[in-house]
Image (tube, rainbow, N blue to C red):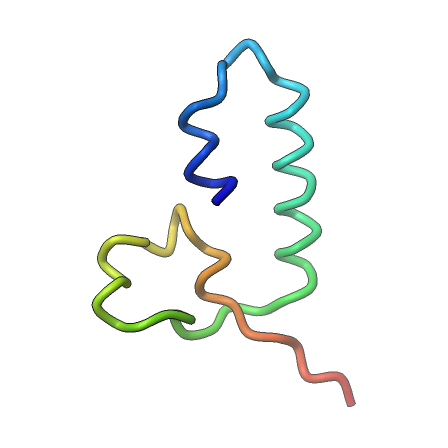
Length: 62
């Protein structure tokens, strides 16, 4: 939802955008690329480049 709300944020709020980018980096480091998480018909609405977090899989710790 935050990804969709970023479109509504004022560009004059760089601090908030930087915080979101930092959180995205943290999330990316906790997971690996995987298959689309939701139903296949929704995949065209949520493309991987923008909605990368819908294409994640957890890392298997051994």
